[in-house]
Image (cartoon, helix red, strand yellow):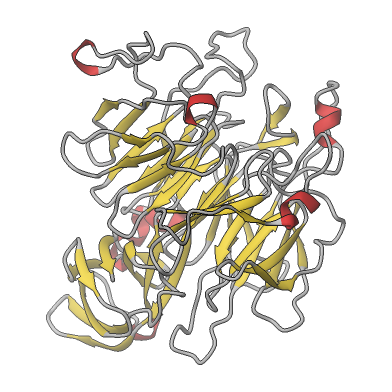
Length: 496
C-alpha cells in the first residue's frame, strides 16, 4: 500500500495492520496486539533480500516523505495510527519508532511535502480541511484552516483526498484537489493564485483517483524558472456512487497540463492511449513520465474497480502535442486498488501491491486476489541495444555531499561514441508512493557544460547545482548522467 526508497537502496514497504495476519513473522517471537506477523518490511533492491519490520499502530491510508537527513517521516493512519508520527532511520537493523501524538489532529488520506526550511507540511485528510507542520515548535504547533479543501469536497464522494501537492519555484505550494487548484503561501496562510477548473470538471483525486506530477524543472539558473503540472486519469462525476451500486463507469482517458508559473495559466487537455483510474505517475531519469498500474473503469475503494490496465504508458513532455504518449509492453499482473510504484537507482521501476478487499483474499474464485509479488518494469532505455550509449558515473561517488549554486564536475565513462551535445545531468527526489500519488516527487535538469574527453573512454561535464531550496529542498536525490536519452545508473547525492 505504501513504499519509499531510502538512501541506502532499501525500500520500506508497509500495509495496513488490521487486514489479518501476514505471511512474514516478526523476529524473536515478537507480537503487537496479539499479532505476531509483520505488516512492514525492508526490501534490498540489489539482492531481493527482505526483513520484517514492526509498526506499532495502523498505517492504513497514511502519508509521508523523506526528511533532509534521509529519515522516512510517516504520518497518520487509522484508529490507533491517526495522530502518530513514525520515523524510520535507514541504518543496519533499525526499525520503526513512533511519536504517539505527533500530529495535532487525525490524518487519514492526507498528503505530505518537504518544505524549503526542512519541515514537512501535512495537508488535508478525511474530515480535515486544514494543514499542519512537523516537527512541531512553539510557533508551529497550530492547525491552519484551508477552506479550499472543504470547497472541493463532494458530498458523499469527497474526491479531494490525497490532494496533489507540489512546491512551486517561488516557494509557494501548488495544491490540486478534485478538479481545481490553488497556489498557497503556507507561511501566511494566504491563497496567492486560483487556477481555472480542469476542462470538463471531472474529479481527479481520491476516490476518483487520477495521478499527477510536477514536470521536470529546467533552466534552473534563469531569473525565473517555469513549472508545469500534468494531471492524468480519474473518473467522471458520480462514478463513486455508481460503482457502489454495481455500475462501473469508464475512467477518464485524458491528461491536463498547466504552466503554473504563467500569469494567466490555462489547462491543455490531451488524450491518453487508454482510460486509467488508480494509476501511478513517475518521473524517469530521462525526463519522461511513466503511467503505470490501475484500471479502466470504476474508482478506488473496496472491490469497486474493474478492467485492469496492464500496459504502462510513457509520456514525453517535450514532444509535439499529439505525439507524446507511447504504449509499453504489458504486465500480466493486475495492479488495482492499493498498488504502488517506485523508481530505483538502476532506472527500473519497482511495482507492488494490489488488494481491493478489506481483508487478505486469495484463490481462483476471488476477483483480483491480494497480490504479494513485486515486479520490475524496465523502460526502453534499459534495452541491451543501448549498452554502448549508457554512461557509467565515476565521480562524484555515491552518497556525495553537494552544495547549492556551485559548479560540480561529473566524470563518467562510455564504451560507445559520445555525442557531446546530447549529455544532461538530472536529479530525482525519491518519492513516497501510495494511493496513486508520489509525494515529494521532483526532477531537476542540471544540463551539462564543457563536456570533454579526459581519457580513452572517460569524459567529464560541468553542471551548476540547484541555486535555491525552493527548487530543491535539502535532502537526498538520485543523480543521473543522461546521454542521448539513455541514463546511467544513478548515485545518491545529499544537497544541503
